[in-house]
Length: 445
Image (cartoon, rainbow, N blue to C red):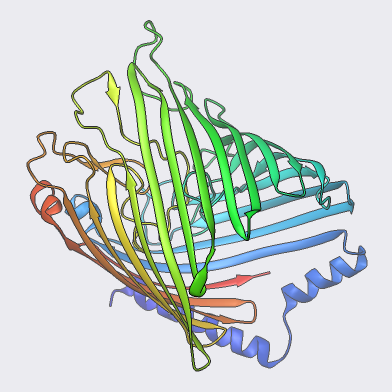
């Protein structure tokens, strides 16, 4: 075990001992202070917070093209919410994300000094019917978070600047939105960059038929040069992109204690000079069993996202535009891949040993939708490609074991994952086997 992991183990042990001592004394200073503030203000002012430590060890990064990683990801967050009445709510929070052990080249996804995470105002937050709105910097979570969401698993979760206007009905909620992803600036304040944005409508009907949820959305993704688009020609007017996503999601209970989910999204638009068309869908079926005071949840899922059949054709794009998702656990616990040019079969078994302790086993297998298009990471970046399609389509398989234990305001967890290389990885990369090992502890206020 390296010196870093010895230090990490010591930190985790110290945190566990502190938690035992803390609750052995029936005393929790942050929670006591938060309750005191709320009581003194009649519930108008509330304080929230989080402290998380997650040491990780990753080997075989980019299948051998990047060095192995050992680092401890440390994140702290402090927030306040002020609601003087039922018509107005003000929310603000700051966040500090560090990655000791990563090195001086740690990217913006791993570290970001003290910065503004959320700062928004909400109108009519308590209303059950009628108009509501939110303006400012905020975290998002639409649907199953496959297209537009903030990932809390990441050390530097993505926030959004923008506005949301909605009308609440007895049957559901109609919403229009305009949001721009916050781009991390290491060593600087994260200022808005509106050159990349998503706008449209996302509508939710919780009991559309029976107890079944229906969501319908239309989202337009735009990006220009200031927003980071690198292709096309300014003179020809192709120095930007715009894609339109039309989607529907159904979810609810079935007979026999089963549950289902089905989401389909189709796209059109332009990416530089290329005409864009895309398709993606995801569906799962799950069931819960009671086993002598324990619970067992089994889930089976299949996903698809289109790829480009001929990457050498500059006038056609068929690779699904994944927008800004939260992808953790969607394609495996290691988060190696994303919803672009892929077929994915996933299964998961969750054993609830107690109300506080759960253990999970997850299995994934992946294939390229188009063997000539790239294999894409969870962020949508191309990892590698074989334009002739010769290496084959099967990417590989992954097996994961992970669990969590909740103790008052603390959550402790562990995880291990290993990928088993398929034909494509063996032939198109250095073929080093990726593995993932971590432990974490989180205190939530």
